[in-house]
Amino acid sequence: MTNPDKDRVAHEGSSLSTAGARQLTTTTKTQPMMQGITPRWLLRVLPWVQVSGGTYRVNRRLTYTVGDDRLNFSNIGVKVEVIPQELLKLPLMRGFEDVDDLLIRTLASLFTQRQYPPGATIVEAGQPADHIYLLAHGKAQKLTGGKYGDPVVLDTLADGDHFGDQAVVESNDVWPFTVKAVTSCTVMALPQTAFESRILQSAALKAHVERYRERLKKPQDKTGQAAIPLTAGHHGEPVIPGGFVDYELKPREYELSVAQTILRVHTRVSDVFNDPMNQTQEQLRLTIEALKERKEHELINNPEFGLLHNADLKQRIHTRSGPPTPDDLDELVSRRRKTRYFLAHPRAIAAFGRECNKRGLYPTVVDVQGHKMQAWRGVPILPCDKLPISRENTTAIIAMRTGADDQGVVGLHNAGIPEEVEPSLTVKRMDVTDQAITQYLVSTYYSAAVLVPDALGVLENVALGG
Image (cartoon, rainbow, N blue to C red):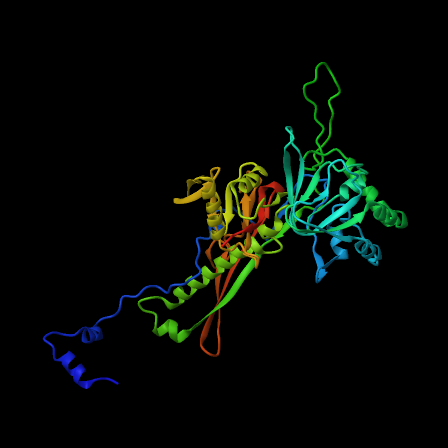
């Protein structure tokens, strides 16, 4: 309830009150603010390639090595089962067609579940290589003996990884490495004898395995590409080998994706309440910001072209202990030449900083587009909150080489399209509805391509700690 006496006193002062003065002035106001706008470093550092035809084809040399992937499993309580169709992700089984799925289901049922405590040996170097192993859950390390007797870590295995399938096919007598459990591991194992018996019973599987063996025998370089015949260091007049560079017959094509929304503005608002700020322009500005945030999210997380899903399996590694350590980032950098950027969630950057503090290390600082950024080995670590954090409080760190000239990662867009307000971003005015609402279709077109597999690497299962 107002106090008339108090109001009268306020007006009866010796000068004009602030309440009265406000009747003859306007407030100083800001533009509309919006939470959720981030630096969007990925959009800023990606080199963008013009894709006028809407599709971008990546031609590569012919590769004999078969694509690989991690397997998924089903479980009822502690009992784990192999999903039959997941077996087709194994390099040995890739491309095999089982008309009625009977053979695949039979093979899946022959896997037996084994449990290994931390520190237990799953396979030992020098022992018979007579099983196919699928790691359903847990983390293990692939080890070999060093020059001076100390163990050397060849690789870190985790959920969905596998080993032994190629050794079985090539009839290797012994394991060339040791695999030890780092955490409690659930492993599914298939004896070589069981697999060979199914080969004898199925002509289709036998023919498929023979084709796989023949592919492995073809000359190839260290990356699995069809080898180019060369000679060097010779004397005299030897016969110089000749050949040609073969290409993939079915190169990958990337189609531009789109993010869209319809902005609605009432004509009365844009006509009457348009001063001192243009209402339509402010609405469009915030809408475009939201679309750009979604664009960066899709470039990282989209299952078709997102960076997290398009990293080659050989370029995916796991942390050695959980949190991101200098050793982990060194391993990530060593997988490619000319790593340009790390991309990490801000919490992962903080976790890496804690690990550096424990060791008394101080990461360098580099300049990126006028901003000071923490770096490791001279490679800037860019923050990106679009990298997901799992329920287990883990995330991933991306390392990439960028640019078409370096056969790296590139962004794809189509600049110069009609009614464009920014490259590959359009605002099209639609009809005014019966409710006097003006509609604007806001669209942005984009995608990303990995030109060669080693351009992109991912450090997975990065523990963030408290």
